[in-house]
Image (cartoon, rainbow, N blue to C red; front, side, top):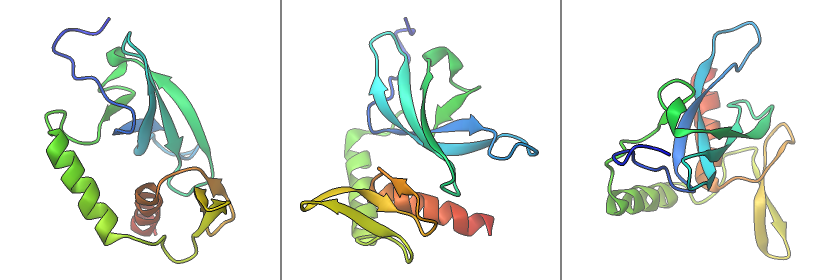
Length: 138
């Protein structure tokens, strides 16, 4: 059980996880989204490589904070600040970047297709994060 002063991540929060992006290179910190949180401090996060070549979900514990995962934003950020940040982001990007397409099923958004053709069940802000990470790498 986590200590009383530990701040629990919430489902939907963004963290960073340490991943070996390339077999011949050092590990890197990449964005991941918390998808399931358990009462004992374990949680599952969805990880998408920056180039979109792989996507998976992995389990983490509160004990691994700082070694296998870290917080992407300050833990003390208030809900109001988070809502304002998400609102600003959604106003900035209302469409996917060039080359990305929406996947719709009877009028319901199912995710996005990358320029390489990979299907991703992620949000529009996540698409933009991947796009921006790729731009920084090139």
